[in-house]
Amino acid sequence: MVKELFIQGNEACAEGALKAGCRFFAGYPITPSTEVAETLAIKLPAYKGSFVQMEDEIGAAGAIIGGSWGGSKSMTATSGPGFSLMQENIGYAFMSETPIVIVDVQRGSPSTGQPTMVGQGDMMQARWGSHGDYEPIALSPSSVQEFFDFTVEAFNLAEKFRTPVFVMADEIVGHMREKIIIPDKIDIVPRKMPESQKDFLPFKNNGINPMPSFGEGFDIHVTGLTHDERGYPDANNPKTHDTLVRRLSSKILDNKKDIVSTQKDFCEEADIVVVSYGAPFRSALNAVNIARDDGLKVGSFKLNTPWPFPEAEIREISKNASHIIVVEMNLGQIYWEVERVACSNSKTHLIGKIGGEIPKPNEILAEIKKVGGN
Amino acid sequence: MREDIRIAGFGGQGVILSGIIVGKAASLFDNKNAVQTQSYGPEARGGASRCEVVISDETIDYPKVQNPDIFVAMSHEALMTYIDDLKDGGTLIIDPGTITESEIEEFVKEHNIKLYRAPATEIATNEIKLKIVANIVMIGAFVKITNAISKEAAIKAIEDSVPSGTEEKNIQAFEAGYNFV
Image (cartoon, rainbow over all chains, first blue to last red; front, side, top):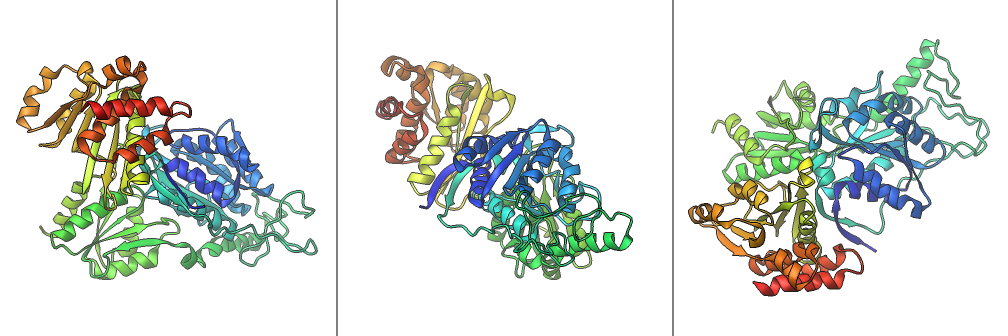
């Protein structure tokens, strides 16, 4: 039966996780993400799932890596300070190709910053927070429905590409209530298991490998050290390292067309394009609509997946747009990615709003009018 | 049409629940769009607590309320904190038992405010014999005055939101507020 609910974004995230098949959650509660943990603590047992409140966030990240290798789709939820603590194990998850979902409901930062206020200061941390070369997938919802949908999608992408996936939400989307529709049937990507134990190589140098769970009889070894196709450490061999780390990157980059998702409103023929993601999109679209009523050629470009960065799509936009305005709740993170890709065609501008409130439509409208020469 | 609503009082009055009920009524039972937001600061405990709802027939983009069309004030402190945001010609509903009205007379006149009095606390205490349902009494008055949500939707949303076993008392509170105005 189709369900209609009027709930918070964080609750919708938990519903999405359950629908996607999440059966293990380990976390440490932190504002403004706590309702994700709270909801799953209440609901997971009924699904024969497990909830563990951990001693801290690095423990939580470790626990969900273990949960995933134990055969359960696993998730944690946190905010900036907790995301910082998780970074070491996040790198381990990338290197060991462990499908997990990490939800970051962003608040004012750096450090403990503004616990109850909104921010988007963790975007580059999602990209580069752990050491080394890796290609993250991150989704940013801008409504309660999207928080549900993108959480489901995060689990699907994690399983499809055997990799960690981030849901980079924010306090506004986490805490506001809207109607969501939970369809009866949702496309779920099940874990691809190896067919036979004979000659099975869990880290074969060939794209995305099936993943066995512990206890099923497969002789496997999982390590953060550079490893060969069997998973055994081979850290002094340049070729092994080069082959492994390039494969980890290319399994994402070669599949960008399956991963990257954007939403374009009025972008054809737009002379000014406003780029945003997460809650600020709501203000951006409002400003764009008002500007269009005033006769300006303005469009809105929303990044559903800030990572991997939609370079081709931004480059395409820049061919027509003289100006690109990036709206985000930090002092310029995604902005510099847009500038890198678009600078030869368009002039880029940043509305970097910090302090704990989303940019107001009239602030964006003022910038549109300024760059549009009005 | 977009309608921006703010409900404010002191922590513990059930201000947030009121907003959830209004948002739920509009979106699930009146088939409109609604977004509910609230302040999450330490002021939520004891001091001024506030909750906002946007209702619209169209998709709601900007989710926050800057200048409400309707302001429901359930405490004097909340009234004085937020009254300046109210739109010219906007609707103000106060609980007279909790408010010193003389302090807003000038503002009401100057900004052409439509002022309504709904003694929610008094009705809850004396008529329903349960002070904590003052917020539900206020929803009754709010529905009658503003028509922002339908009466049927409000009742369904209340039944869907209050603790099981308390539905009857809450509907009684709603009706008392609705019929007072």
